[in-house]
Amino acid sequence: MDKLETAKEKFAVLLTGQLARVERMKNEKGFLDYRALEQIIIGVAGGDGIGPAIIAQAKKIIETLLKTEIAKGRVLIKDIHGLTIENRTAVKKAIPDDVLAELKTCHVILKGPTTTPEAGSPWPNLESANVAMRKELDLFANVRPVRVPEQGIDWTFFRENTEGAYAVGSMGFEVDEDLAVDFTITTTQGTERIVRRAFDYAEANGKTRVTAVTKANIIKTTDGKFLRVCREIAKDYPGVTLDEWYIDIMTAKLVDEKRRAQFQVFVLPNLYGDILTDEAAEFQGGVGTAGSANIGERYAMFEAIHGSAPRMVKEGRSKYADPSSIIRAAAMMLSHIGYAREASDLTRAMDECAAEKRIEITGRENGAASEEWAEYIISKLCK
Ligand code: IPM
Ligand code: MG
Image (cartoon, rainbow, N blue to C red; front, side, top):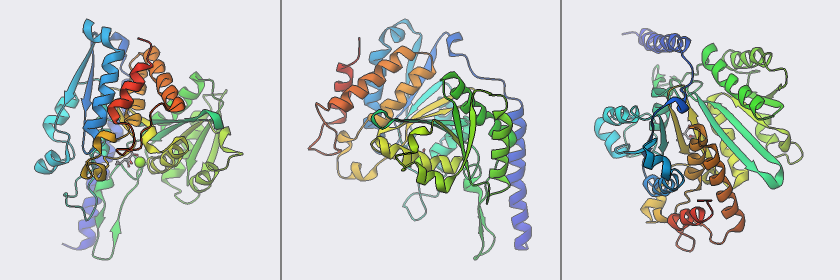
């Protein structure tokens, strides 16, 4: 067949899928009320690489904090096995069907990092399990807080999590040997829901400013729509000012010590959010220290923002991996499901350990093991 015809067919498939997604979004019913549930099921999925090692520590901490709730049967913690690169390779799926079915029996999920195969790696070119889970469970809001109190930094990022360059990231194609095309998607519904979430958060937390980050001067259609939706939604929040920045200058302003403390809440398309949150986390001590919440109406997933660190595993250093990021994610999860007191107790305990540094994590033998760090945190909890 003519290459243009083939390309058109592929494009039609992609658009059909996205139009169907828009229809689904139009029928969204609202957020799950965890308080109304008789039992909250927390799924714990270790993932790849250092994942199982660090998640074991986070799990122990949740079990400590929710001891009575678990004893009463109000909370059930369920181990989810099989979200590994080996299994995914065996069935050639980003998330094996049985694992996905298990995940869907839970209300919230705490997930370790999963290896994302890249071109040229020994693994097949599977879609990232992370990205697949965000899409399968429609986890549209990626919420990433970064705090450095001594520098006045208190940022919360609302990264759109199911659209942009990621929406059909695995559906780009080579039209011929010289022409490769990828796609980026912005929908009205998909943008409205993330922007509302950012403004609601700002309003509920006494913040006065939401910063929208795009490149709408160049990526006119999709980023342009994102920005237009931000302006529309902002009208509903008279106490919160919308502030507009382009991604290039925003990356620079984050390192501007005179300006950066003025930013509060950010809302941004997927790829910019991916990049800017790594930069932001660096000020707090690196991606290993930041937690990430992926929130949808029915499901929510909480994860570390770092990867599976295959090098640490290869060098036998998994037990020295820093569990801080996944423990921060666990704190976000506790607060999301209504255990705000336990969440702030955990955050305080972590901050105390980080400041006091009776022991230190280095990722190597000369530092504390993940388990010792978790015990250190547990010793600071009000039990
Ligand atoms: C993140 C990660 C993921 C992403 C990868 C692992 C697919 O970088 O959560 O920020 O690109 O979203
Ligand atoms: Mg990232």
